[in-house]
Length: 52
Image (cartoon, rainbow, N blue to C red; front, top):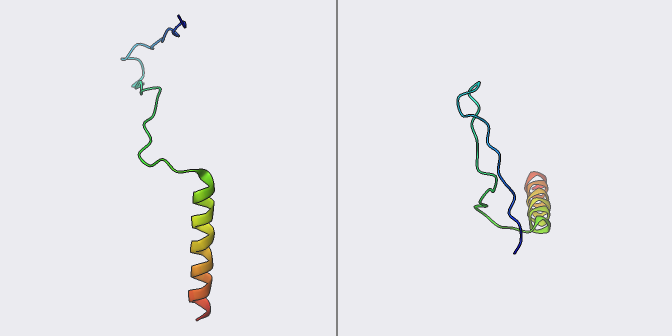
């Protein structure tokens, strides 16, 4: 079996430190290239509207 990493947590009451989950859930899953394409299209549209 694969070994699981032991998690070490700091005491909760020291200096107001808060422990957050190590794994984050993504709300929107999107490839980075789609984001670049979207920003490029948006920029072209803004430039076209500015010239009109």
